[in-house]
Image (cartoon, rainbow, N blue to C red; front, side, top):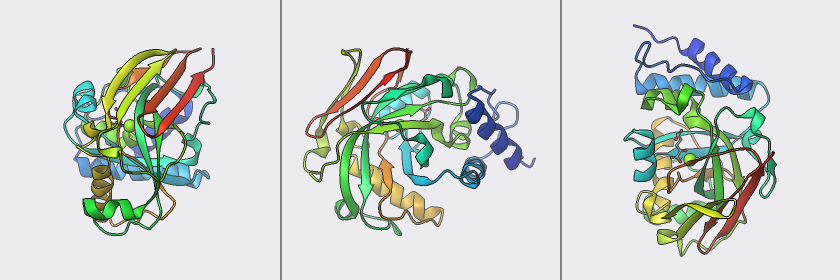
Length: 256
Ligand code: OOG
Ligand code: MG
């Protein structure tokens, strides 16, 4: 059976704009992972047509903690746009989200076009800087429940992000401590080693995925490496922060 790419893309786009959850599509009629990426591309094109600008990519399910939390077992990727940027240290209005969660991230800024598969040794040459970051994920599916195909179609739940101070020191990335706090209380701890063994491996994976889809990531793009720990549900009137050893922190508050 043919998957209705345009119809699903439109429904997901509309759900994001209206902050309204949808039933999963794959349970009604299953579709392939290839079609899921076609849906993702079509729904992102709707946003670009409306004036949103691509600022980079994100990887998902690069840590065991995330795979276990969401019940999936493969790495995925999606696109970030300027409309998703929230101010570091700022106030986030939750009304544009459905059931947002926050997770700690390592964010890279590229300094060269990524136009071919990179090795781990080459990866750092393609980077301008690295920063601690928080990602706000917000599945467009009811109860935050999805198959791998559903979440890919939904641009990997991408919704918001804050980015902390940029650093050019990549030396401690292999195994830096990660602490996420909610109102000062520690809610998640981990290490950047949880991200594919080394967050630079996310850049290597990204370069392969880009090549497979015949795309070039321009210099000056963001690459979010994927959360090192499980995500935490957001509620109004709270303060969320992440601290990554050697990199500093990123934070935001949610409007009461
Ligand atoms: C999908 C997004 C996964 C990550 O860092 O692993 C992701 C989700 O969990 O809803 O962003
Ligand atoms: Mg993430």
